[in-house]
Amino acid sequence: MTHEPSDTASLSTSESAANDGGPRSPRTVLIACVMGVVLGALVAAILPASWVFVEAEAMPGADAAGGESVVYACPMFCVIMDHMPEGGKCPVCGMTMTIVSGESTLNRLEQRMIGLETDIVRRLPLVRSLRVVGEVDYDETKLARITTRVGGWLETVWVDSTWTEVVKGEPLASIYSPELYAAEQEYLVAWNASRGVASANKTLRTSSLLRAARRRLELLEVGDEEIAALEKSGVPRDSVVLRAPFGGAVVQRRALEGASVGKGASLYTVADLSRVWVQALVFESDLSWVREGQRVRLEAEDGSEPIIGRVAFVDPAVDRRTRTARVRIEVDNSRGPDGQRALRIGQRVDTWFESALDVRGRLLPPSAEDSAKRPLAVPRAAVLRTGERNLIYVLFTEENTDEGRKRNYQLDPENLPEKLWYEPVQIRVGPLARIAGDGQLAEYYPVLSVVPPPPVVDPKTGEKRAVLSLRRLDEGVVVVSKGNLLLDSQAQLAGKPSLLFPEGNRGKSSDPHAGH
Image 1: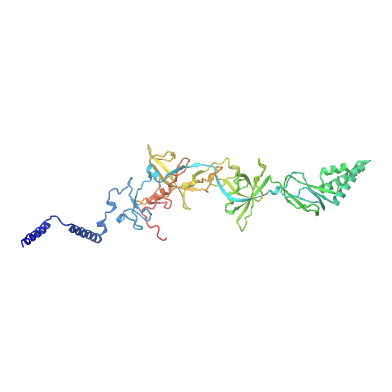
Image 2: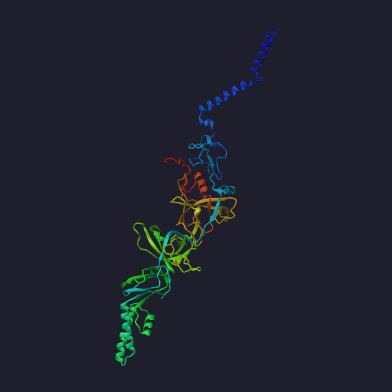
């Protein structure tokens, strides 16, 4: 009984302390925080978005250097906007928007970040390389077929296997022929008669018979040595010896000892392999790059040293089925220090036609290759192509002079300055080519001309204004050979002229995925 009033009094004291702002329990604080969060979410859902988010234009730093307005782009290039969207996210893919500056410059850090590599415009001896497969064949002007001019039987065959090397005048086979025996007997009669003549009339007549008999022997392929031996012995022979007309290899043999042969029978075919032909098939679309007298490089599959040949003839007709024309190449095939020939009949070789280019990217005639002016060339990696446009990025610095601001394109690619400017330059290029005799795989485009950029329309006055840009390429101009694709992407994000947008795309933001 004595404790009840005191308990009631202490409870009343605690409640009055809480109402007066005294210390509260943790449970009460937690409930108050949850109620605050729920109330804030309800307010954000009910109020307009413009009351909740701050517009980008109201933020400081909304203008880039140079007075140009900042643009905002999606990293995935979904949209390009002149203001920051609500929440700072891309309305298409939800990625965070990026602020893009309008100044086309590169500092030292940015050069390292994009992996900048450069090259210079140079005049180079360019050749367009065309590779086809060729096949080694006989030189038809160095082939000889040995046939018989008398009928008979083969008595002796000295060369009895193919690919036997023979020298000029070497005996191949002998033929027994009754016709030859009669011709030699007639010659001996005339020869003996000419030695015992007594009057001038008889001498003249006998000489005519002797010449006719000798001519008959020569037509039967009896040589001077055989006729001299016949005159010395005075005994007619019954066989004729077939000899090699020139040195070479016996590529075909049909002579068998004891076989019967008739007039005109083909016994041997001899080929001089010191010079051969390479027959190559070139497609119709590439024939304009092939000329007679043109230098050709041949490479065998065995890894031996390349061989140089010359185009001797181009077929005037194109095969209707394969759409190719045959090109004949003459190649020296003399024996090397080891006694072997470099090329074999029937062998396949890689045939490289190297067509020298002039300053306009066209084929030079072989006679003018040494005196022609070399074309301007840029590396293949420096050229961005769409099929219709060819773009390079040129580096320069800006200098203040008495005449005003001036661009300096003559830079040292090995020692670039701290700050660089870059600009896209559209060019016309020739066919892809390589450096003559270099043996490297580096490829270059010959530069034919510079295409001026389209004029810019002033949005206020509607007047067209020319764009300040490089109008002509000269030797020594520095171009970007690595990192140019990143520079072009940056130009697209900034709405400036680029590979896909020659007039720029500022204010034309749209979803490029639409319609795909």
